[in-house]
Image (cartoon, each protein chain N blue to C red):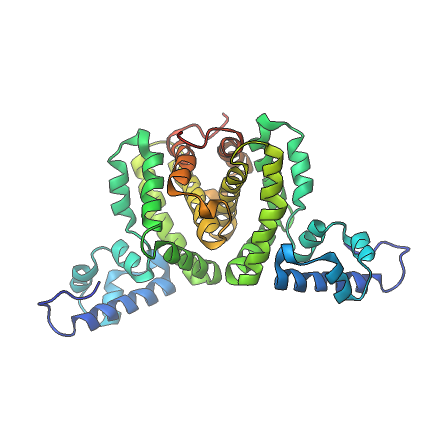
Length: 198
Length: 198
């Protein structure tokens, strides 16, 4: 997110001020409570400039806290494969994000800070709920959709914790292929299969 | 673990000294490295007295760190139902432990301290590996048994994180029955089903 050539001097400082303001607002008010308007005011710029720099609130949040992806972008890609391949598509997209560059470190750092800090936890919980669980639920168009999405979240959260934070072997040393093959059917059932005994 | 009537005066102080020594040794040397002999020496008592008070190293560890159960005892009970009901039996036993008394609080506190503190993390990782994953793997008698056990650990870890630490709705407010029904088939497949595409 470095400024492109041709922009005016000082843009990089302004971009950083917006990110700083965003981090503070999200930490203080949570994901739902923070607004682009208030973040812009804190940084002394216009809302339009915040949108110009960072796009939507979701995109700004991902950038500000180092979330390893913009969920709506990942979801759009994941849904392309259709409902029957959803589990496989979700786990492979997530693993691709987590396992490249500094993805694993970023997700571990995010989890650590959320567990250590109540405002970071609230921020992440609201983001997961508003930007992921509800969005997935709407797209699923089935009963219990939010419960289904939260089951998926539990398996993915546990995978991240076990592999990156606890580094529990042999899961921590398994290949992406082994993990994807093992976990895809779980996510598929949580999203579209039978989850109750009734 | 308060002293029963009829024991000699000072027993309660001795028991507490053993627990204190155990907490320090486990934190310093991990679960694998700490020995009953060294813990006894630290507390100024005989190893036999430590065994008399707390049983095995596994039982002492569970008592010292507030682990919500002694894994080998839970496993023995879980295996009684046979391999075909393993998933259901595991999730119901775990939920029964987590949802009674201060179980949820204890598991959340354990996870928080492990994430915040490297020696607590090592201690818990070694305990999970030595007292649970390897024991389950031996009982399963299948290929990839440790990988299978670590997949189970990932789902249970994620459930604990999502429900008790993140308090992610609607998972956090779902009934035990809903959770058990949704997650039992996952654990069953991880333990005895097909987990690879090969």
